[in-house]
Image 1 (tube, rainbow, N blue to C red):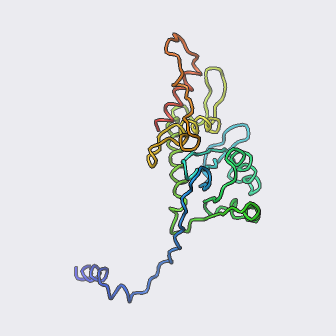
Image 2 (image 1 turned 135 degrees about the horizontal axis):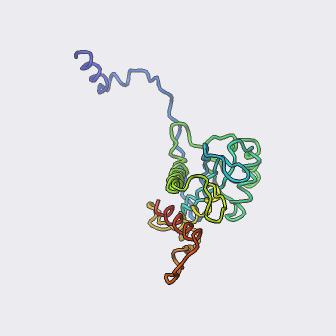
Image 3 (image 1 turned 90 degrees about the horizontal axis):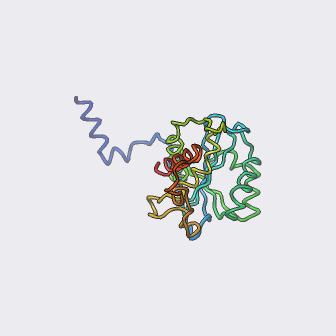
Length: 237
């Protein structure tokens, strides 16, 4: 009991704590992020791995790009072992072609983003690449939270499985559902902005199937009905 009392006292003793040598690693410097004023100035990127093989190209990962301004997100199926060139081409062809060049990319220290190729890219276009330190991962917290949201949406569809066939015999994989999940997310109100990402990015909300679905139809194709159900489920998640 005496030893416990001494230990508790030492934890609260100012003189002892100042004299005691720290054995932990030094904390990294906090990265101050200048908040963007327009969409796609600052982009958070991260990779979701450990996914089951999906699609004709056997995708096993997903690249997530999040706009810091509007919270709009883009989900791109890819491979865990893609090279830095593969990743660069994917971002240029599927993201930058729609959004324009970024001012700053915030990501982890994955070799896909730290290679000489990316260094040259940023020097050429005058953009900046920021990495969160080991003790300040919140720098990239936006992408981390988006990944959690994406996983929740995919989990909401797990009753269908990561791979399933519809009534027409067409096989759906998790990667083929990403565009629908992306659409549902863009049309959902974000907690931090109280607006939908689509409104802040483009000024209007995309029209969803339930917005124009005719109520007077006696019968609806099973595949169309399932698509509507899945979209609503992912939006609610």
